[in-house]
Amino acid sequence: MANPKILLTFGSDSSIPNDFNKTWVNYLSEQIPFEQVHHFAEPNVGNDQISRKIILKVSEFCKTYERDELLVGIMWENMARIPAYSDDRVMSTIVNLEHYLRTEWFFEKAGIKYFMTRSDITASTSEKDNILNDPYVHLYHYGLDYLYWIPTNSISYWCLQKRISDINNPKNICTKCHLEFTKFILEYLNFQGILTNE
Image 1: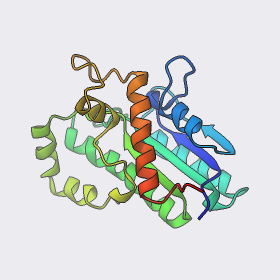
Image 2 (image 1 turned 180 degrees about the vertical axis):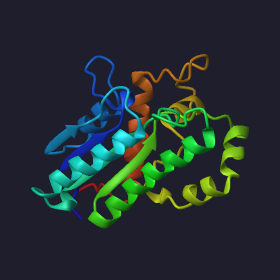
Image 3 (image 1 turned 90 degrees about the vertical axis):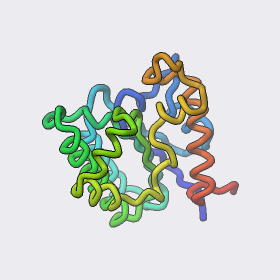
């Protein structure tokens, strides 16, 4: 199976290419010889806007290119960044899980290769456990296909666990974090057979 030829990336602040403080989208496009690379991240947007833009832009590319030529990478934003319910953590979680699921269903129906991850997890472990105990959250959460998620909670969590982040400011994801996390993404893509050594 041939490698994808076109990379499309989506997200918010942590997914915007930057020549001085490089992000994962810079490093990924540098380390894989894609024929085309298109970045669609925007600053200060929530997952509702990210999801809609994914479906719009990928649908446009499907009109011109074969679907197996595309690879879509997504770094979802902080769950609290939504236009409503932001003070209700359970409702905020449900709303975001709906965006994740809608996007997964779109990729599944369209036959598009993709991977997902998150920029940050704001809830503490105990709070997260309480949220997951909600029956609706539980239903949505276990409806996701985690086969297509990078196997970690978020880039900020992963870098903190690897002692790459500043422990006093773990939300400050430095360019070294992005570089090392990109290597982790590449390991995942190779393991899943999305990329080959051809």
